[in-house]
Every structure is written in structure tokens, then in C-alpha cells.
Length: 304
Image (cartoon, rainbow, N blue to C red; front, side):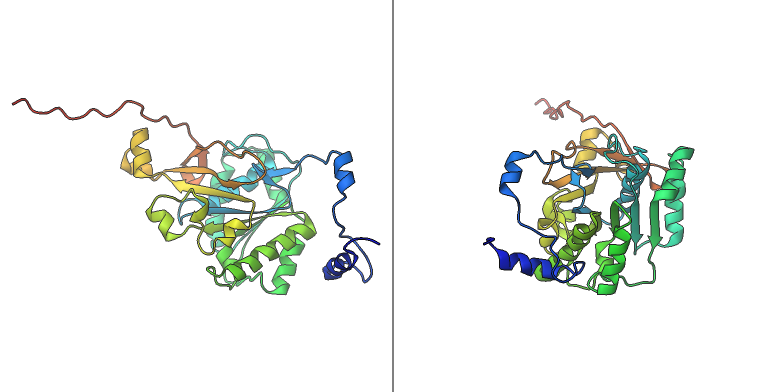
């Protein structure tokens, strides 16, 4: 008698893609895992394994949409405008759905980004990046027709980017049960297609006020949004204190942002400090910053 036979039947009946009586889901083979070394983990983005759900979190206006577009470009073309290193997959396809920005804004971003690419890289991006604005629509992942449409698109892609998550559902962000449902639906897409899903999201007000936007808990809404994903990246504007340590004046401070990972379950991820500078057209480029290590002198007391 097979242990858990009834549960195995139950799980397989839940899979809508299986015909009645078919089986595709089985418990782990313990002996098989002991005897055979499993394949190496396949990483799509630095620290993010293929077929998983991740989040990119940042305050409004920090440049997270441009960052996501540049990561998509890196994945598709290998053009390393962010200093991420060589890509780990070949012939990747990315689908990027933005429900925030209009067509003209996207055109400006692409034009600026195109200045950083070779002719061949432009061709690859045109062939393998599906970039579509959804301005005027109300996409809702809780609606089965939208879920099916997203799953179909994911089936043709290695990475599906949703910009921003708030625009893709009608649930209460502060409800742990409703946000758990949203993440579960995204995980269903990855499980059925093997495509990774990256959603873009905002930080909460508290983290902005305390300059803690690089923390895992900075994500707006229920903590489930962070707890239930295995990869979370941040884009943090340079603080006044950081600017002072780098001897950057207040006027130029807003040009700099710090990119990193606040949650990375399956690898070391990225170095702790990856500074980017906002160039023409909003394109983010790596920059080397050096902290001022000379201690500040105490003011001398006036002689009596």
C-alpha cells in the first residue's frame, strides 16, 4: 500500500491541466535524492531562481520601473547597464506589463535605454521583450480570465514583470489572507509554466520617514507580500547622511540610488552597496563612490 495514497489522488484531482485519473504530482523520492545529485539551481536574476516569485520594492519616483526595464534588457540581450555581470541563461524572453505608465513615457524610456545598446542588442530586445502598457484597463489576477491570460503569456516567457502589483488586483493590501491569495495565484503561474514572476511594489510610509527603504519590512501592506516570496530587491534613494559621507552636495544627491537585495533565500545575492546614478533619460548606470574616512575635526575652543 502506498503511504498517502488518498492525498496523492486529492492533489492530482486539483490540477485543472490533468485529465481525470491522470497523475503528475508525487511525493519526493527519498532514496533517489540520496543516490543522485540533483541539477544545479538555475538563476534567472542574481539570487532569484527560475520559476519563482520575487518583488522589487522602492519609493515612488526612485526609478524602479527603469530598473526593471534594464534588468529585462540585461536578461534578453546581455547588455550589462547595471553592473550585474554575465547573464546565466541564453535566449531569454521577457514579458513586461505596466499598468501605471502611458505609452509615451515608455517610448521615452526605451529611446534613452537604446542609446546604451549596440545594433545587435537592439534587435534582440525587439525580438524577445514583450512590453505592453495597460493604461485604461483594470487587470485583476483574482479574476480567472485575467489569471488565464497572464498564465498564457508566462508560458511564452522566462520572466513576467507586473508593474505595479497594486494595479493587478482589487484586494486589501493590508489583509494577510487576501495578499496570501494573490501570492498563491502568482505561484500557480510559475508552477504551471516555469516562468518567474517579478512584481514591482511601493514601500510603506514609515520606512520612507526612517530611511529604511532597503529593509525587508519596508514593503507596503501585509508582511505576507515579503514573507511569501523568496527574493526581494530594493532601490533606495541616497540619504542626506550617505551624501555627506560621500561628499555629495544636496543638489546632486537625488541622482543617486542604491540597489540591493533585502531577501535572497538561495544564494549570497549582490554586494551590500551597488550605487547607481540617474543619467540622461532616467537610465541608471553603475558608479563607484568612496566614503570620506577623514574624521570631522572638533571646533577649537576660543582661548580665554
